[in-house]
Image (cartoon, rainbow, N blue to C red):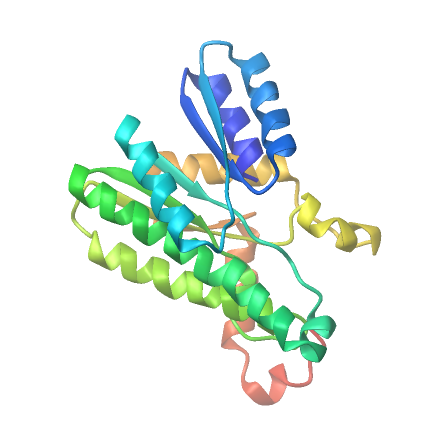
Length: 235
């Protein structure tokens, strides 16, 4: 999702991008693509272990030493197999840390810097999975539930300031993370459409946005179902 958002921003104007990820080859490929789209944009890549607190601290400090961040889009994560999680608590630990704790740590470090500067936007990718615990994905949902509560608290902290916190809750989207769902015939949202929704929400400072927007209604219904009905549904 972040890659497609970057393409939109690159087409709109000249920007300075700092691409952060685990695979240098993948990051370099994205950087090359963005450079072709806009040769005037400045693009750098940073390889990081998303679970290493010292690396997170060092990265954000180094970036801010060069220039303040206007927009931080925190979009990393993985979609685990629920059955595997139920058989291996090591996997549960990995899922909760990568999808929950890591986005929170990145956000909190960036929030410290933005508070010092007095402005900026932190956009965090949550998920509709964090809306209500469901047997099909409750470990992943628990991690995203953490992200949701954290983002809400961060929004409260910066209410009335020039620091904006945008929480994006995508439904299942056609990305590499969901390729196994696509192979199973699942209907997935277009990543281009979701990226446009994200970019628009960031531009407008929308506190919470569902992508596609239909998921706002879908999840409102799921949240409101009485437990005796909910427990009969295979989701």
